[in-house]
Length: 411
Image 1 (cartoon, helix red, strand yellow):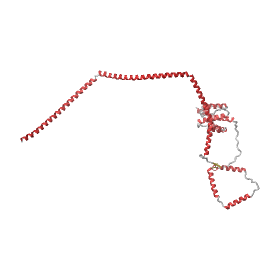
Image 2 (spheres, rainbow, N blue to C red):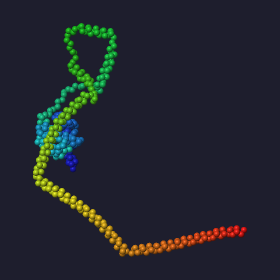
Image 3 (spheres, rainbow, N blue to C red):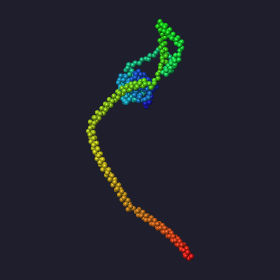
Image 4 (tube, one colour):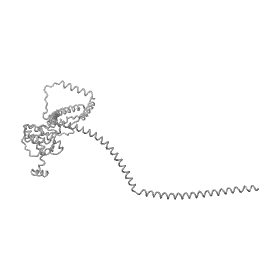
């Protein structure tokens, strides 16, 4: 819906409405330069210079909004009204409302919602800053005049940039070459030297009666100087290791620290005063609350004392309860054991299963005794057979031994 509304507005105003804020931003930048914003704003707050389309395109909304608030407050003060410089932690809605109220007091019409300025870029931001710049220029009595164009322009000779500027290395090289040439030229014949000295003595002896006057034209001389001037520039390369550069940097940093310290000291003092005031308010409110709730605090203390006594009684009572609960648990265990034994005895008295088991055991014993009797009979039979065999063997042996003795007696 917002995009459709914006398209309708652009259609009503024309096809170039979308680019109007770029033109407005360029005019604003020229007006800021006329108000000398580089010295008063940029160097003071350590900010970068604005580009041609800084507030027309979104780059960093937070930084753009802070720059917008800073420039707006500065131009409102330039226009003769008083507005404190906003800080980064201030409420953006309150800052925007204060800027718009000052803008309305200057007689500038505002027909857009304040939320349009919260983004920090756009046509409304450029419009507000441009209107404030106009009011600031009116307050310092600045008037626009028609540009004056020169009637004639002198054509300057084009000089190649490579040959126009000389570096320190080239100059030193040329000086070294000149020194070598001079060393070679020092070897002059004596005759030539004598001729030169005679000419010099003759020139000194001759006195000129008339005053010397130059025949060169001043305009031609100036043109020649302007032509040769670019070739006389010498660029000295700065060495970062030079102590002079470090000293200059130290002085620059010191000046920046001192300037920043002055501003931050004011802000810190203001913050300290606000914090001390709030602490005093909190202390007074605390005293008032303590006075109003003193009887309730006493009642709370008595209730806490009663609660502590009740807790002690409860602890003592809980100790006796735990001991009794242990005894009760032991008694219940014994009771359960007795119940189990009674149940087992009652079930054994009414149940015939043990008799059946006894009968089965007796039958098993009888079977086992029969088997044992059979085994015993077998063993006895085997023993009897073995004894009989032994007797038969013994009789045989006896009979064998008795026969030879009888034969020996006969013979």
